[in-house]
Image (cartoon, rainbow, N blue to C red; front, side):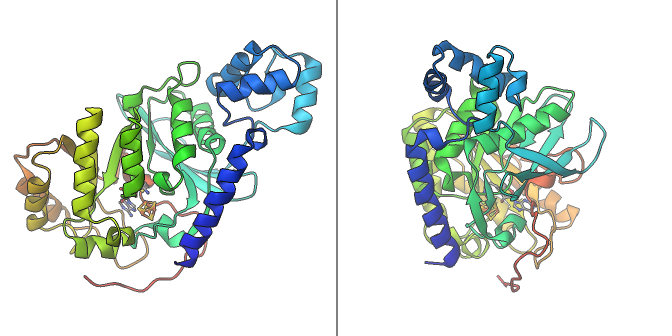
Length: 371
Ligand code: SAH
Ligand code: SF4
């Protein structure tokens, strides 16, 4: 087992042990039931838990002082023990309200993550991180190059929304788990955070407007399907042949394309929801017209849509295909039995910054791989 995967397993076990002791969970990140219990522990009626829920997730309070429905004495007592602020902004790019803005956020232990605000005409999307670094180690991804550091808890995932909504003049309408990390390697906290975003006593973001993206952690896709989780699911396919996909995304050795397609089909059948496939176009790896033809064939009986993302170049051997090749790929797809969208990386596009997050100053060195 690689060192990173081992570290991730140990972290997951510690995390599970911690979660059992709900009382150790920071207040931001607790659900309604836990907040009701908390208030009762402080000798307050349970309904105060509901008020606290609204203060945290709807009004986005960051200090007990703001929570005026609690007595001054209680606020003081609680603030001695708990902090409501889970992260602070270190830097942000862009300063106009219409710009895509990338935020570098520092968590309480000094670890840093990135989140992106993407306003467009008809929606305001945020791209949130689910882990510090990532253990999946995709060869083309800047986050993968950082290695895995730790999971985020639901409160830290929520804090990204809090910070970006505080900044934006417009209401955030959509959330994508496409920042740093593999959401399905931090399944429980991601689902808990999605439920907080979705709660009508909180941000009340519709289930169709919350998307969780995975590199293909098959057992978690199955769990997600069995549980009929209501949020949208996206799988990053990124190649049409196992040999290439395994080079790009090492977990493909364990959970190859055929198995992912079967799981995707099962998901759409059981949930009646459409699945999204993300497909990063990398020159010489995934951008041929044969790839486009194979995609059409693979997806012909799956209720899906395809998001084509021309690669955002980062340090390393991979390149974005020239525009004419992207166009040729798209025309080969046409007409397809599924909708196709393209995310040109410049401008106001969702993955403009999402796919290339890396907050470390000195990324791990890696060798050039060939196809
Ligand atoms: N770990 C999850 C979600 C985070 S990555 C996943 O892999 O799906 C979000 C998306 O960004 C993925 O589709 C990934 O393939 C893509 N991505 C990563 N690096 C990229 C880059 N440099 N350019 C374009 N897309 C990239
Ligand atoms: Fe992790 Fe996704 Fe990057 Fe792969 S593409 S290393 S799964 S964040």
